[in-house]
Amino acid sequence: MSFNEIANLLVKDLVKEEISFEKLEKILEDIDQGHSFFKHWIKDRQNFQKLKANSDFHGHITDSNWGWLENHTFPITLEILNKVLTPGGEVAIRSFGGEKRDLLVYHAICPELENFVSLIVWVDTKSSMNAWMQISDLVAKKDDQRVLQFSHKCGILLPNRIHPSHDQESTLVSKEFYKSLYDWRFTPYLFDDAKTIVSHNSPLNFRRIVLNEWDENTSLAEIRTTIGRLIQIKKNSIEVLIPSLVGKPLNRIFLIDEKLKEKLKEKLQENSLYYFQIFKVAGSENMETHVRNISDASSVDIVGMFLAYSTYLLHLGNKRLKVLTAGKFEKLFKLFYNQSARFCERNNSELDAMNHLDWKTIQFGFTDSFTKWIGTDLYVVPALLRRFLSKFESETEDTIIQKFDESLSSENHACFTDIPYNSQDNRMFSRLEKGKINKMYDYINFLINEKRFILKIGQNFRPHQRDEHFFWLQKQ
Image 1 (spheres, rainbow, N blue to C red):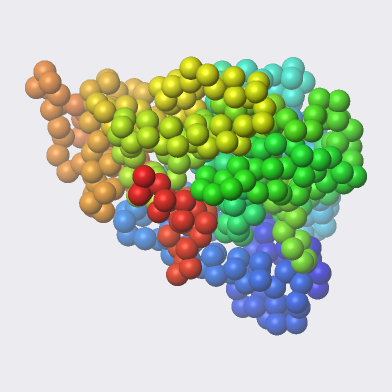
Image 2 (cartoon, rainbow, N blue to C red):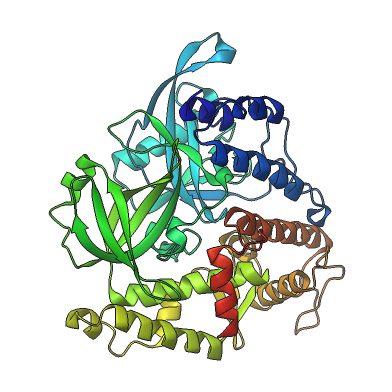
C-alpha cells in the first residue's frame, strides 16, 4: 500500500470509521514508506487515549462512541484561513452505499484549543447547513472583522478536528478586543524558530486539509509559523534565514507553489523580513515544508514573537499560569532586543525601527492577548479561560487565576473546595458556579498537558528542541 492509502485508513477526517491498531500494525509489516510516521502515530494515539482518561481530569475529557469530546461546556471561535467557497470536492460515503457527497475542508485558527483545526462541512446535510451559510456569508463579503463561533453543541475531536455536528447556534461574531488572537502571525502556540521549525511534533496533530484553493486534493499536514529574512526565490522553493531563540540564525528551504509565487512575487523582496505560514506535509519519504502565506515583518516582530513564544513555552514547561516577574520579562526583552539587533545589523532601517523600544510596549503588543499582570507577576490566561472569566468581577477573576496556578503547581487534583470571600466579605461565587469553575480547571489542566504532548515537551528521554529552549529560559 502507498503512503496516501495508509494515511486514508489512518486519519479518518472525512469518514467516521477508524482503522484498528491490530490491522494497521499488520499493514506496516509489509511497507517501508512512511513506516516511522505511522508507527509514531500508533504509539501517540494509544498514549493520548491514556492522557484523556487520566483521573486528574475527573472524567471531563471523555469521548463518545465516535471519539468526539462529550459534554464540553465551552463555545469555540474559528478564524478560517482558506476563505474560499468550495475548498474540497465530492467524496464517496461508504455508509451511503458509495454515494458521493459534497465535502468542504476548511482550516482555521482556534484560540480556545490553542491550535490550528480542520473544519469538516458536508454541504447537503442538515447538521452542516447553518455553519455553511455562515461561512458563505463570511467569504462572500470578504469579512475580516468577524469570526465563526460554534456553541457547546459542536463536535470536537481532540486535538484539532471540528464538525458542526447538530449545532444550529453557529454564528458570526465580532472579533474581540484582542484581534491578534485571530491573526496567524501572532499565535505563540504555532510559532517556531530556526530549530523547532524542522523538529517533529506528534503525528496526531496532522489533519487532512486542502492545500490550494485551485486543487481539490487533500494532504496530511500541520500548520506552523515563523519569521525570517527572505534570501532567495528559486523555481519551486525559497531560501529563508531564520533567527534562533538560542544560537546562530539558520538557513531553511521551503517549497512554494508556482501559482502562489506568482500571486506574491510583486510584493516579495529579497533580503526583507517576513512572517511565513508553513504547512508541514507528511509524505512517503521525508516531511515536506511548504510556504502557504507570507506577510511583512519587522525587527520589532522578532523581539515580540520571541518574547511571546518564550512566555507560552514557560507556561507549558512549568505547567503553570504564573510565568514571569516584571524583572525577568525585562531581562528577556533585553536579550532578544540584542539578538534582533545582531540579526538586523546590516540594515539601518530595521535597526532604526527598534529605537526607543521598551519592554512594556512589546509586552502589550505581543503577549497581552493571552496574559495578565497580577501585581508584578505575569500570568498566562488561555483564551478558553479568559472567555469563561469575563462574567466575574476583577477581584474574583484574579483569585480564580491565582488559585488555578496554585493547584497546577502543587499538582492538586481538585481546585476550589471552599468558596472564597472578597474584600467586602461576600462570597465570590455560588456553589453552582464553583462546580463550573472546577470543571474549567480540569479543561485548562488538560489543555496544558495536551499541548505538551503534541509539541513533545517533557515527553522523551531525549530532550526535544523545545525542552532545550525551556531549560535555557529557566536559567535566565
